Image 1 (tube, rainbow, N blue to C red):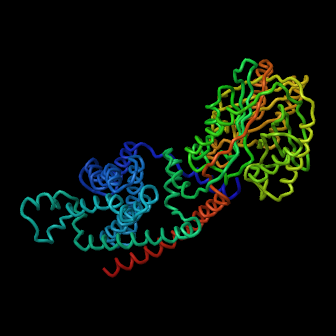
Image 2 (cartoon, helix red, strand yellow):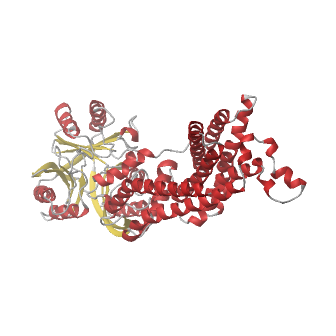
Length: 621
């Protein structure tokens, strides 16, 4: 993940799950009651509170209850919880504006008319705010969004019309009409200053504000349309929906960006001599992102669910450009893994494990028949994702020594988060990419020439009590220990997204020094289910290193006790999937961050301009 992508992901901390609709309504009525006590001056406090509930709370309740069905009628999907929270927010805007206007009127002697002018501006403002939000989370068409967006303003205006006695200015209807539409005698005295001109001003102001919202959206949407061919509203709708409500709307947006790609899916399986599967390593060259369960974010768990034995889904050599656009694409990956599994030829022969280093790159590997498993790390240096092209080149170099197939995992086990200018990406053409490629070639030659001996394997896992907020996914800690020619090698897989600096070294050193293990490597799955609300949530950030070391030791001891003879085999299939595509992730993140940084200033300019025009309109009126 780059700094740009991290800035985008970190915005999720500002998004929260909307409270239940009835909680929002109850709070809105309470606020309205307090506002009534402050605003009105009748004989009884409870009467003031009731008037506040009626004149301020009723439009909020109407907007809460009517907006979702009206929105759906026009093709939207605004939930009751979101609608109620939006109505409550708009009510707070009205209360704050009226309170400020009342204070100004008292201090300056501007009078009651100034307060009602402020009320008109507030009602137009909440109309514009509702329109902006509804377009962001429910509609792309402004024409379809206007009706549900206007409900709160229209409800408040209707009450104002009826209880101000504005009907008296018109020769309309008979006694029945006057009974229901002219109730000035039941309203506070302050409302009598309202006349037809108030509603004309409200209509003009609403038109002005709607035009401003539309112009604002056009300005911020143009760069997205020109460079990505998509709308920023689609992105906002999906991003907010996923974080706040857990929807998969974001995948619909990503599908518009996606590009077709062919990716290798390699499976290495271990079975007992009787044919019962004991463990399965599955490595699709896909990045498990972008976040949560969107796209391939929960790919490791989905892969693990398909294995009969204990599944090990390490991180592949692929970056964010190889994120799957939808969770449906995971099924294509699983189908390819099943085909590869069915083609495996097993052997009981394996080599000891060996290491090869070049520059900052270190690879550990072990041959099983004519195939090999390898894991690359740059620890103690910081590193993040290894790009797809680098991984393919390293695999090819490893096979050039005589190996048939290679499962090359990115151990993904040492990074400093988003600190610093260099985030450790292993990109094509970089020195570190050649370090990895040359180390893979050396290790491939060593493994191809190494003697083969009988193979034994022990596996174990612990779900642990940690959760994604702690940086640990549902697969917990998994350990596989191979035994070949009296050499024991432990492969530790933690379901997390990279590790804090130094943690990998501490784990490896502890296992080798304290247990009956000759060599070890710690890997992470890079699951992005741990990154829903935190851009950086590495293993070791939220949990103590000592606690993780103890947990890994416990699982490793269980794996050592499980060691028994096995057969192993490997096969690779290719899958055609839709991924983000080259440079799409960075472009998307750049546009989103630019929108956030410049959108605030642009919004401020629009607000100042509209406020100035509104003031001029009120002055001339």
